[in-house]
Image 1 (cartoon, rainbow, N blue to C red):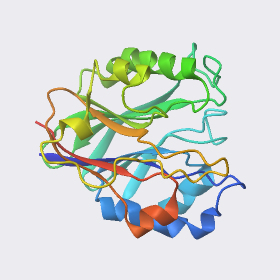
Image 2 (spheres, rainbow, N blue to C red):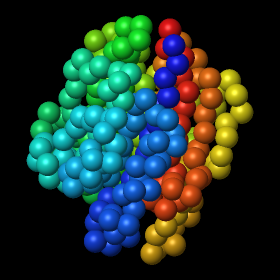
Image 3 (cartoon, one colour):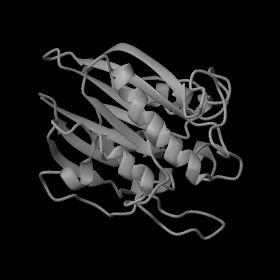
Length: 254
């Protein structure tokens, strides 16, 4: 059976960013356009998630705020279509030496998290584990050590299920952290059985510092899970909602 997975950095409602009130409808349209069964989110805050609960009643989500393990700070939520998927178990760990409590890791500028969910397909009982994460934008050491932590921790939280890892890695292809990740998982873009659709860069480069555009958002699949298709969405809604383009992969769950 096929599932559609997405990763999407929605650009937090920080005062320096364009007002969320003018972007929330577009963000909801992104989910609908993608047709995602499960999605990894980054930079969502509690207020943003509350709005999307109203705008996207077909989805539920799990996750915690990175600053206090409850509501404070940004979330890396896992969204799932509750008409197609049932939640079995979920949790969050921090990308830090002590991954059980809120904390900074390896000279990182921000606290960073990974949220995981074990899910079951309602139609046929197929199960998998989905992980949403966001690596630090500032510290190379933090990105490297976070990748190592993901390699260690994801199998531990999966309970033996296939693990899909998705998120904003703040890394370009060929970087050391991605090399560590791709020893364990395959990049959905390069593994796609159909030619990838859409632009290569996933970060659109909206920044007052004039930083360049890059591919920094990824979906990584287990080696035994076929990637049937891959797309970087560049719709009007995607461009209105965030400085990141959403990434979508169609996967065959055996």
